[in-house]
Length: 329
Ligand code: SAM
Ligand code: SF4
Image: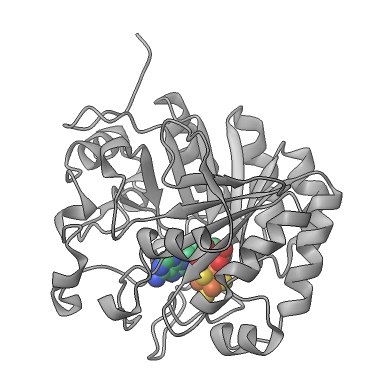
């Protein structure tokens, strides 16, 4: 019989997101806690062979897609070797990156069979990039998006929309899709440890659609079965856009994701308050499959069991989670 990781709500989990590191060369305010954050020491991180062995076990259990993330996955010294090794597992391999270093990895990504890449970029203005990320890397990110397109990668650009910060640029991002075959993914701002989330900073799916619909004629596009985003097309545009409405219209009923943190812990949901340590038993030589199965079995129905889509009622003091940089987005 085909092996599958299924939870108590009959959701098949075939998409693994592996964080390679919690380290990053940017300091996005919505991702990193404001107070001093100490990156994990190297020995606490899964080593290359450990990542490949654990990923192989997941693939044997029916995982068909692996996304590398972080922190910034491409600041890890052995990132190229990890990409090459995972490219041999016969699954769809992809990556989410801030694109500041991706020019150094074009050949590795191609050789590993990576076709589609998600890039984070929240503003099209250089000064604002510096404000949002506390680093001066705007031009390299923009140049690297062009480089990826020239190299025939499919490019999706993730824009976390935060009221008062960048929602006034949504239409500029949409205009960008007129001339360039990229997909813009507008992401509702989510609460994590230390990121000062409150519901007033949220721009909802509905609000974004109203804004975009005021200028363009939008048509809904077809979604993939486990899509977390709702896709849209605008006539005459080479690219498209999608909205990730985790807060106002969550998509938990079709969730197929498993997250593995850089220190080898399963998070069965982005918002789960508990984790399952795989790395310690793995290092002790134990069979970790029962831990994986138990982690999937205990997945909550919605939003880690921590809140509901009634986002105005969320009290961030009551949420128990890591910061996004430590989870792996
Ligand atoms: N460093 C890589 C990057 O920035 O693409 C990968 C890791 S990052 C944590 C993964 C994704 O999570 C990024 O697209 C980022 O914008 C998103 N993200 C981080 N914090 C978020 C938040 N509070 N709400 C919504 N999305 C967030
Ligand atoms: Fe780094 Fe990505 Fe987080 Fe920004 S969103 S701080 S680039 S991990």
